Length: 386
Image (cartoon, rainbow, N blue to C red):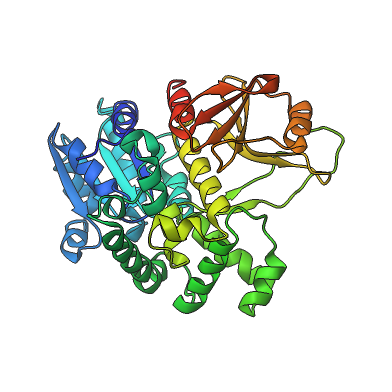
């Protein structure tokens, strides 16, 4: 059992809010974490994929009132959106009677849809937490985590081939069953082609027209496909920082498949040797580092990238809630060197701290106080800011 770093945060939010929504893609470990929390208090668990559990909520007020002294865990909450109105009434009634916290833990696989549904009914009553795949501070095996990705069953496979087989089936299930249930009707093969194109372009800026030509659709349809994968927490759209520097800035977002193991499976890369020999190696490593750092950064940190038309560029800019700005360059080299564009970007952005993340273990300084550091080292620094 690998303890998830978000477990303490979920417990803290349950002590503060009457409802907590734990969001994340399928198979990321939401249910396991919820069951672990349930061992510490009296609880009842409902899985809305089961018709028997849905039947229990034919009269949700009556059923949930009988369990108002328990933590009620509702899995796949997005399958019963009409339930939010009942939850609001129960929470408000409970507050009037002094039942303010620790009542509902809601698990969902679709972020925007769940935010929309619960935002209309549970505003001020719910806290949102995203559970990502395993990160570097949870497993401390950078190479294996990069190769296989952080979905628990993929990472914990007995060998690389077993891990790849799990991911192949995960993707097939997502495309053939889960996405049609969670989002608009899109042909599975078309979505697979689009997802594979994104894998080849890992870390590139969005060019909807080019993607549309490759798929034989229009640019509006490409944006709709992209919105779906972003909403399902499978793709990250990293927005550019529009700093007021008097320069022409890149305005298109950069796109990353959020789990490196999924990226590798979409490209048929089943082990480290295959990954290192593929042109995607740099983009894959960059996306892997970005996801890990964003995942452990303090709440309310805002991630960006920065790029000007003249070549000034930073891979990741983190604006912290304490007002600090960190500029982070990512290099897949044991002897990383910085290009002129990074130093030009430093002048534009005036970051509080600057880093180069590389696959080595040592930490040392380059000129201008830029720190060369491992992914685990920088992730630890970010986690210590909480």
